[in-house]
Every structure is written in C-alpha cells, then in structure tokens.
Image (cartoon, rainbow, N blue to C red):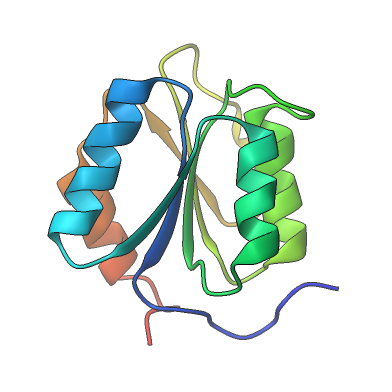
Length: 127
C-alpha cells in the first residue's frame, strides 16, 4: 500500500539515461536548495525509492531501461507513492495521455527546468 499524505517538500529523483541531461537537472535543483537523487535506469530508481521515504518529485525519461521502461516505472511510482509529483519526459514522440499514470505531466525534450520548478512550486502538494 502506498503513502497517502504529502512527503518531503524539496526532494527530487531524476531518472535519466543521458548523463548530460541528468547532470544538468541535478545541478539545477541542487543550486536551488533541493535534495537530489539520481538514477540512470529503472533498477537504480527502484533502489533509491526503496531506501528513501522523502522523495516528493520524480522526473522519469520514458525510454530508460532496466527491469521496466520509464512508463512502467512511472505507474509503479504512482501506485507506490501516490502524492508524488510525477513528470515523464521524452525526446521521441509524445507519450499519449492515456499511457500516462494519473496526475502525471508529460514534458517533451528539451524542456525548461525553470518552468518545471514553477509548476512544482504551484502544486497543491507543496507543504
């Protein structure tokens, strides 16, 4: 059974196979005072989620590899930690809305991290 109440306010997990994109996102959030965890595939992401109970925002590339792809990982996160803010990103074709988990936002690459941060800050989950 997943969590049902809001979790840590400034903690994010970046799941991205492209190292430069991941490093940019990590640096962006760290410079703004966020605690940042990173994973290059679904398996690493699941390990982080198992170890950390304070992750509030998860950004997942739809094409990451591992025991599941990015979309399956996004559904896993939504089931396991329902209040998490969830962003699915892709540089390939847009992900159809019906393939996304509930309350997930799709972002085509390249995306503006400043805009993502504004969206996070305006979320009703923010404590």
